[in-house]
Image 1: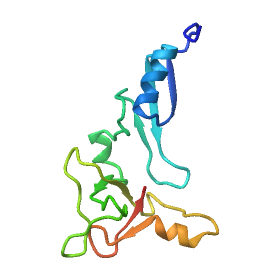
Image 2 (image 1 turned 180 degrees about the vertical axis):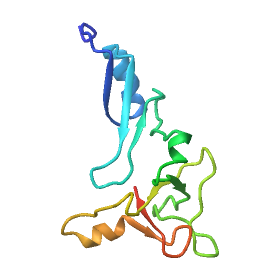
Image 3 (image 1 turned 120 degrees about the vertical axis):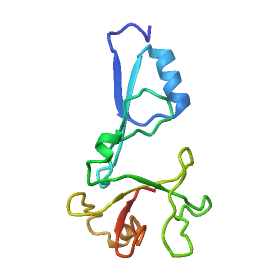
Image 4 (image 1 turned 30 degrees about the vertical axis):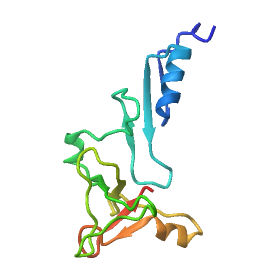
Length: 140
Protein backbone atom coordinates (compact mmCIF):
# COMPACT_ATOMS: atom_id res chain seq x y z
CA UNK A 1 0.00 0.00 0.00
CA UNK A 2 1.51 3.34 -1.08
CA UNK A 3 -0.02 5.07 1.95
CA UNK A 4 1.52 2.71 4.50
CA UNK A 5 4.26 5.05 5.78
CA UNK A 6 4.91 7.81 8.32
CA UNK A 7 5.96 10.53 5.85
CA UNK A 8 4.23 13.81 6.73
CA UNK A 9 5.85 16.21 4.28
CA UNK A 10 7.75 16.28 1.01
CA UNK A 11 10.34 18.89 0.04
CA UNK A 12 11.86 19.44 -3.38
CA UNK A 13 11.94 21.27 -6.67
CA UNK A 14 8.65 22.31 -8.25
CA UNK A 15 5.82 20.00 -9.21
CA UNK A 16 3.24 20.48 -11.94
CA UNK A 17 -0.27 20.93 -10.50
CA UNK A 18 -1.50 17.56 -11.81
CA UNK A 19 1.57 15.72 -10.48
CA UNK A 20 1.19 17.43 -7.10
CA UNK A 21 -2.43 16.28 -6.75
CA UNK A 22 -1.68 12.77 -8.02
CA UNK A 23 1.24 12.48 -5.56
CA UNK A 24 -0.91 13.57 -2.63
CA UNK A 25 -3.79 11.30 -3.66
CA UNK A 26 -1.51 8.30 -4.11
CA UNK A 27 0.80 8.65 -1.11
CA UNK A 28 -1.37 10.63 1.33
CA UNK A 29 1.37 13.17 2.05
CA UNK A 30 -0.45 16.26 3.28
CA UNK A 31 2.26 18.90 3.09
CA UNK A 32 4.44 19.61 0.07
CA UNK A 33 7.06 22.36 0.21
CA UNK A 34 8.49 23.41 -3.14
CA UNK A 35 11.72 25.26 -3.74
CA UNK A 36 12.78 27.29 -6.74
CA UNK A 37 16.30 28.32 -7.58
CA UNK A 38 19.27 27.17 -9.54
CA UNK A 39 22.87 26.72 -8.57
CA UNK A 40 23.81 29.51 -10.97
CA UNK A 41 20.86 31.74 -10.06
CA UNK A 42 20.82 34.52 -7.49
CA UNK A 43 17.11 33.84 -6.81
CA UNK A 44 15.76 31.50 -4.14
CA UNK A 45 12.06 30.99 -3.45
CA UNK A 46 10.04 28.56 -1.38
CA UNK A 47 6.36 27.68 -1.67
CA UNK A 48 5.47 27.11 1.96
CA UNK A 49 1.79 27.98 1.49
CA UNK A 50 1.02 24.56 0.04
CA UNK A 51 -0.89 26.16 -2.83
CA UNK A 52 -0.61 24.05 -5.98
CA UNK A 53 0.91 25.93 -8.90
CA UNK A 54 2.46 28.73 -6.84
CA UNK A 55 6.12 29.25 -7.72
CA UNK A 56 6.75 30.63 -4.28
CA UNK A 57 6.92 33.96 -2.64
CA UNK A 58 9.07 36.26 -0.66
CA UNK A 59 7.26 37.73 2.30
CA UNK A 60 6.70 41.51 2.10
CA UNK A 61 8.95 41.93 5.16
CA UNK A 62 11.85 40.17 3.46
CA UNK A 63 11.13 41.82 0.09
CA UNK A 64 11.45 45.25 1.73
CA UNK A 65 14.68 44.45 3.56
CA UNK A 66 16.61 42.29 1.11
CA UNK A 67 19.04 43.47 -1.57
CA UNK A 68 17.37 40.97 -3.94
CA UNK A 69 14.15 42.75 -4.83
CA UNK A 70 12.28 40.44 -7.17
CA UNK A 71 10.34 41.74 -10.15
CA UNK A 72 8.27 40.19 -12.91
CA UNK A 73 8.56 41.69 -16.38
CA UNK A 74 6.19 41.64 -19.33
CA UNK A 75 7.58 39.43 -22.06
CA UNK A 76 6.89 38.64 -25.68
CA UNK A 77 5.31 35.20 -25.40
CA UNK A 78 6.77 34.15 -28.77
CA UNK A 79 10.39 35.09 -28.08
CA UNK A 80 10.51 35.20 -24.28
CA UNK A 81 12.24 38.57 -24.53
CA UNK A 82 11.25 41.39 -22.14
CA UNK A 83 8.96 44.05 -23.59
CA UNK A 84 10.38 47.56 -23.31
CA UNK A 85 8.60 50.91 -23.26
CA UNK A 86 9.29 53.91 -25.51
CA UNK A 87 12.21 54.88 -23.25
CA UNK A 88 13.81 51.46 -23.72
CA UNK A 89 13.12 50.24 -20.18
CA UNK A 90 11.35 47.04 -19.21
CA UNK A 91 7.72 46.98 -18.10
CA UNK A 92 6.59 45.33 -14.86
CA UNK A 93 3.55 43.03 -15.01
CA UNK A 94 0.36 43.77 -13.14
CA UNK A 95 -0.55 41.52 -10.20
CA UNK A 96 -1.73 38.16 -11.52
CA UNK A 97 -0.16 38.54 -14.96
CA UNK A 98 2.47 36.03 -16.09
CA UNK A 99 5.96 37.40 -16.46
CA UNK A 100 9.70 36.87 -16.33
CA UNK A 101 11.20 36.68 -12.84
CA UNK A 102 14.31 38.83 -12.40
CA UNK A 103 16.59 39.83 -9.52
CA UNK A 104 19.18 42.62 -9.45
CA UNK A 105 22.82 41.65 -9.78
CA UNK A 106 25.06 43.39 -7.28
CA UNK A 107 27.91 42.74 -4.87
CA UNK A 108 25.31 41.77 -2.26
CA UNK A 109 23.45 39.50 -4.70
CA UNK A 110 26.05 38.31 -7.22
CA UNK A 111 25.63 36.23 -10.35
CA UNK A 112 28.82 34.28 -10.94
CA UNK A 113 27.91 33.17 -14.44
CA UNK A 114 28.77 29.96 -16.22
CA UNK A 115 32.42 28.93 -15.97
CA UNK A 116 33.97 28.89 -19.41
CA UNK A 117 30.80 30.03 -21.20
CA UNK A 118 30.75 33.79 -21.51
CA UNK A 119 28.04 33.72 -24.19
CA UNK A 120 25.57 31.84 -21.97
CA UNK A 121 26.48 34.05 -19.02
CA UNK A 122 25.66 37.17 -21.06
CA UNK A 123 22.29 35.70 -22.09
CA UNK A 124 21.30 35.52 -18.41
CA UNK A 125 22.07 39.19 -17.76
CA UNK A 126 19.48 41.83 -18.59
CA UNK A 127 20.86 45.35 -18.80
CA UNK A 128 19.21 48.76 -18.58
CA UNK A 129 16.06 47.18 -17.14
CA UNK A 130 14.65 50.08 -15.11
CA UNK A 131 17.49 52.60 -15.47
CA UNK A 132 20.69 52.97 -17.46
CA UNK A 133 23.45 50.75 -16.17
CA UNK A 134 21.42 48.39 -13.99
CA UNK A 135 21.78 44.62 -14.36
CA UNK A 136 19.35 41.83 -13.50
CA UNK A 137 19.50 38.04 -13.54
CA UNK A 138 17.18 36.65 -16.22
CA UNK A 139 15.50 33.52 -14.81
CA UNK A 140 14.05 32.55 -18.20
